[in-house]
Length: 206
Image 1: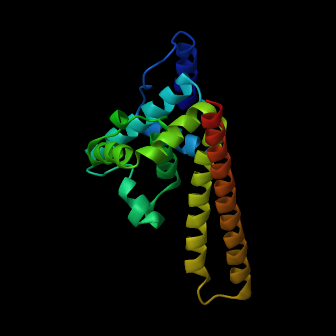
Image 2: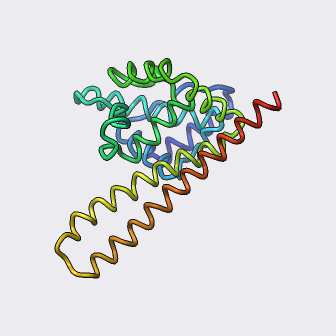
C-alpha cells in the first residue's frame, strides 16, 4: 500500500512544479517518517516532490498525535530533555529549521513553538535555510546523521542499563556501543562544519 502511494505521488509530481503536501494515512506517515530519518525515503527533500512527501507525512502524523492529546514533535525536549528525543523527531526538527517542513504543517503547541523558534533564533535558522539552497545534499546528510546519533545514543543507554552488574562481555559490548555513538557524533559535527563552510563561502561570493 505504501509503495503504491509513493509511486502514484511520484507520477503526479511529474505534472506539478510545486506540489502541496502529500495526503496519506497516519500509518503511512509513520512509515514514511522512519524512512526519511533513516535516509531511505523515496523522495529527495532537495526537490519539491520530496519536500511534499515529507510535509505530508509530518502533517498526517502530527494530526494523529494531536488527536491523541500529544505534542509532536517535542521541540522543548531538545533544550531540556535531549534523551527524550527520538530519531524521527530530530529529523523533523532539523527539517523545520531548514525550511523542508513549514510551521503550518505542525499542530497545536508544536506549531506555536516552531514559529517562536524561528523568530527567536533567526540568525541560526537563516543559516540553515540558506544551507538548504547552497548545500542541500550536505544538509540532508546532516539531518540523517543527527537521526543516527539519536539511535546510537538510545542503544547505548539501553545497553548501559543491562550491563550493570554483568560480566566483562557486557562491558565490552557497552564499550563498542559507546564508540559507535562517538563516531556518529563526530560525523554529525563534521557535516555541520561542512554546511557552515558552504554557507559562508556563498555569502562571500554573493
